Length: 624
Ligand SMILES: [Zn+2]
Ligand SMILES: [Zn+2]
Image 1: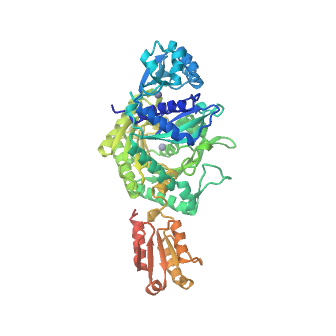
Image 2 (image 1 turned 120 degrees about the vertical axis):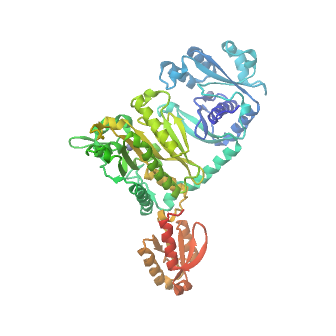
Image 3 (image 1 turned 45 degrees about the horizontal axis):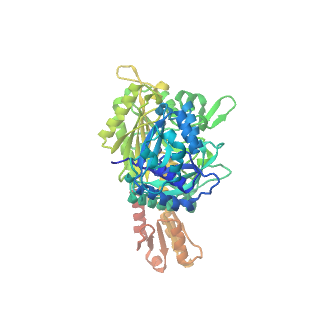
């Protein structure tokens, strides 16, 4: 039987809980879901100490449980019976869950239907456990209507669990496919006023090879952490006084950011987009009309002015709609395309802010285009072309895929009528097919307003990133009553396509810093060339080389310190400078430079003109 990875991960969470209760008797279980790379389980260890030093013990007994081919079996009881069983097991947290399920406070209530499910692990191996004695003495009465004698005799572990699914037997799991990752504190029900529990995180994959690959990626990712590289190369800073989540661009970081922005604009300009500009605040009424005020709630930064209430903009869309609305467009003007790299503000929780990953000021490379339904396909093609060109330049298009994110089963959770959604979803799917995009339909992933195409790219170490997005929206034009005049002289409502190529400049920089591990392609590198004269007497020549390159807009600097040659080269390498030019007597005499390529480690001597031409063409071509 082939089980999904999520099923395996969740089953392993049960096995971890069994192992924890075996090794730390009296430990109480809270909840244990699967995650993107494994699973976790929250425990209350009571007075017992638990740390990562105990990982080996837990892993060992988990492997043993797997080797015992324990079965997973389910039985269902009423709320009252569930509480009775859980009281005997001292599982207070689960009792609270039952209470919440019964009172409808729990989000999964609709799936439960008045029954509580338990999963038991049974196996005929090993000595009778305390659990079995306990069951036979005290629980048999309770279980006799659900379990037969054999099941009770062989019972190893019991857990209340709403699913979703478990493997039928632990023999379907690879004992070497998981590894405990870390211990963290976690509040019961995510509420800081509740008791703090011990959360054990684990990695889990289908097999050992996949697990090893993931561990390697994590190891490699640590070395590429953009916060570490950002500090080392002085790309950006975070100031206590300015506040968390509000990173500042240092000159070197600003070069990367500006190069990305310029490149993005050039890709749009050649495809007939217009630049627009919008202010950073707007009246609250704008976002009430767009629905964002309700959607973002307390994430909005509110600004009180003399008369009106303003909001720091959380989205650019409503602003661009107002620009469109102030024109009397006809069908001949369609599509109308606006582009604006614009900063938006959202009050994220301070605990989640870090580097460029979670920020309060995000600059989207935003754009909106207004078109007719029959123009959607062509427009999606144009945007797809931009996306492909941009990410091919950055070396990220190997093995990418596109998520066609559509509504889930419960259509009431989305804004807008069923008809409009059907048209929008079909338009994007047609466009994806016609443009031969490697797409998959993913349910429940649509935004609250509209369906979208999300582009997933793999970086240099195989991590997947969601970056570009194309979203097809029939709702906002309705809310803002946008229209243009069609061939018959009637008013027609346009469709709006929201699109972002890099997602945001902050997210883009984060991904690209880590993808390139700080050694950027020359066109976006903040420090392209450093001149290293080996003695003071060559400084004059170094100066003239500097001027020549500077005149061609090359980003060049001179190290005329009194450090040794080795030290100077090491210092340049620490800053990942693409080309280090060493200058000796010979270079001075021949009007040449001794070139060290930081990335390839190649060394060569060339005429200054030749070097300058090489650098300029590398920048022009945006070579990798
Ligand atoms: Zn379960
Ligand atoms: Zn938008």
